[in-house]
Length: 324
Ligand code: SF4
Ligand code: SF4
Ligand code: FES
Image 1 (cartoon, helix red, strand yellow):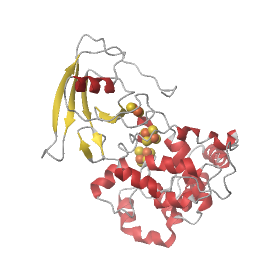
Image 2 (image 1 turned 90 degrees about the vertical axis):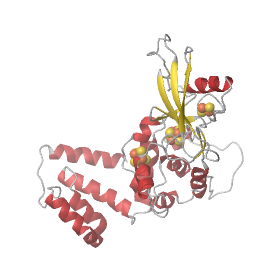
Image 3 (image 1 turned 180 degrees about the vertical axis):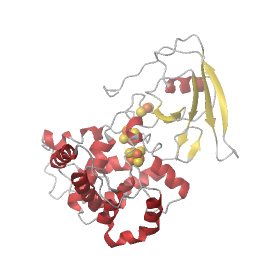
Image 4 (image 1 turned 180 degrees about the horizontal axis):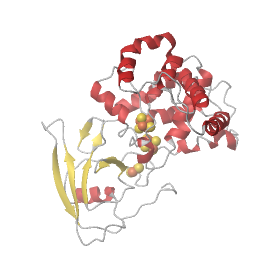
């Protein structure tokens, strides 16, 4: 179990049983999902996985997955009271609704189908592409070369982040075409792991662009739910975006990032009008109807706003740009 993760059932005194409404569905048999309620006595330090195992020991045919029981294999994730969690790591609560992870097809009860995720990761070529032949074991890697993506190595592919991402939720509702679909945080962590490996020579920045990385809105939802505290944004997505500015400087994303920092340094705040014009150039004319609508709502400023402390903001922005 990762050392930084702590578990506590401190709020449960054990005087009442643990009650869970659990999602049941067998697509080969049932027309609709249903919920079955189970009540069991509390056991000290009880995790959700213990609760599920006790149910099965009592003869239920409830389907769920687990393998290692110690936050290493990533197979036991479920949704508990609407929050994606690793069931072997997460403490029970007195009242729970336990469901399969959102956004994934259900095989049975709490077991999800990971085929789509596996296919997405496979398309990212998840193995080292070496420009130099393998020199044999052991390969010497310098600490500073690996330091920044050590956090990514902790990823157990539990897909909790994937099931909470609001962009994936929106795309699912809008049925976005597979050509322009955002692939989500979990596959991007796998991509970043290789992108920052000094032995890898494939243009991973181009793959990240194809994966629509620019659609991530940096809401941190994925970071908050990651059970093993992977720095999904700082160490994976943000660094991938930086890599794109160098490897693919003509891409819209690279132009957007350059325009964003230029405007911040110049004006001390983000000016959406200037940002769109600088990023898209003449293609921004296609957004004219939207711009007029935003202007009417007071969201488009034609004149530069002067803000207090602008020199301080400029200094901070310059420091940030240099530190990257
Ligand atoms: S980044 Fe965290 S939440 Fe996402 S798949 Fe990896 S371990 Fe799970
Ligand atoms: S930060 Fe990006 S990848 Fe993570 S949940 Fe938000 S939109 Fe999705
Ligand atoms: S059983 Fe392996 S991570 Fe939970």
